[in-house]
Length: 499
Image (cartoon, rainbow, N blue to C red; front, side, top):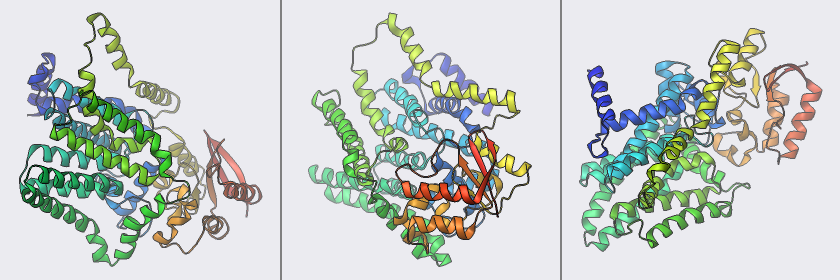
């Protein structure tokens, strides 16, 4: 059956006509592109420190501990559920986590393609889907599985349903998916809210307000069902307070932190809104198209969430790419056609886009030749050294490469140390049930009371943000007095406590 399907798909690809494309062929192409681009990163210890934290949180849940009860991180539970499910089924497998991440990126891009076909030609939609894979997989720390990948998957699926169907049960289904998106990353509540307001406005404008209100009620019920299902385990376990504080209150406290300001996001927001406005003004994008209006309000909602967060990290943009690429693709398609003599240059540029992947293919092949394994990085090599040399693992503190906790099967010294940077985020301490009041108290507790026997740091890098002078001064002085550097593995520094 599978062989026949693959044969049929390959035949269709050989005689490719965009208008003949079906969803199976498009999915096949997107999966191949996604896996090819992301495959060499399946073997990396970590690509972004957030992914390492999600893996550790997922392992804790797979071990029977709900998020926030044993370990703590600033994300809603559905982020960790993805990792918990993969770990429960496949064990400790970087390959499985990232393979299914690649498939998720491909399916998100398929839904993006599906949305685009409702607005423009299949040719434009196809290339929008392909570039959606590129932008969700390249240009930064996007090759791992981030919370943005998961929440965007749910949101794009919900939007595809709204573009496809307009009855109550499908609005309910889209509400379920939107709820899962918000329970993966809370900032997605902004585009959900703006989308709801748009439907009310559209109902008022078309004199179908009662119909739109009924649709929104179904969507709202689906949304609430997702929220209730997410918090139900905490209700049953009697941990609803830490659930509420961790999911809803902590992100607000974080966004009000001293390092975040809406003004920092203004240049980016102005550029994106400027591009959209230019497209509508020049009529390269049709403002009267209802579906493009929906995409525009979703983009606006996401931009508002960035402003509220007070910063725009590279991986935040994953949430934006599917929605901005569609109008961008429509606008680019209206430019003059490329002359045939320049087509080879376009093909070469397309081939060169995943340069990061080619370099990583070289890296894993080199690692295989030198060390006998494709798996690479200090997050893997440092724990291997610690195990091989019988160093202490039960009381260990990773200030860097904290994926090592997962590999060694141990927990961080405190809840706040689940993500090393959270040690300094004292505004979050009340929400993680931390008895310490300040970040310095937390660090002193770890070093002077817990007294890790083994500590791992990174060569050539301050342990904490370079702006946090007092934290770095304290731990540097403490390490010099109470620890000895026993090994250097790559850039990983392994310290042993003296007494």
